Length: 131
Image (cartoon, rainbow, N blue to C red; front, side):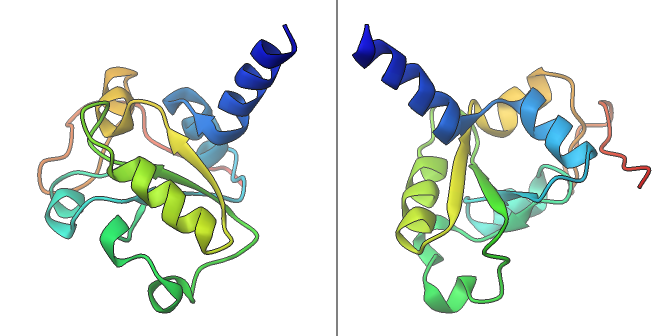
């Protein structure tokens, strides 16, 4: 039972679902969506407010401008892509606090949230902050 408790606690500590990310972004929490795909994927469609650092390019130089107090939620296309996992690993190695988005941008859209970019989803709930 102890191993199982650790397993589920670790999942919650290292992963985030689209609903939790949407709530965190909407509530102005210090959370940053990080698209770990290549730039053409980010330009085509992304989570609103997301930044793009492809996992292959994550290093001290490309991350030196980032807020080290923020939680970075890495994402990619979805469950058939591991760019978010590679990005989470790289960012963790660089000393950042990281979570991985369950299901990537596909599950973000599946849950009904809007996207930005050249091929953005036309409908969906938009991130809004009234602060």
